[in-house]
Length: 134
Image (cartoon, rainbow, N blue to C red; front, side, top):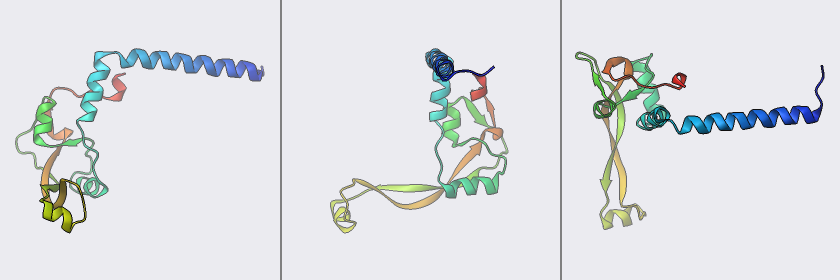
């Protein structure tokens, strides 16, 4: 049975309305707010760091530093080896350095160092929420 353009439009409008209502209800739940807070805790890594993580731990899905895992209620298992990534060294610029580098920024990246992160599979503790929990 063929639908008219008006019927299709009405159906699309109804589906959009239902989706909006469900998303609004979801956004008000404590569990979803916890999920958003948890996801905000994970950094967006540079392409270089993504490659470094992948070379050292090909099955890594979520990585964070020791302190960040601790804040999320998870702890690094004894004997796990850190995944090394590059981390910027940020320095407060003196007025002379601002002139030299032709910038008004108060802080700047002056180099990089290696830092340690761990994948979720290397941790134990409080369960992390995932999108499938909703």
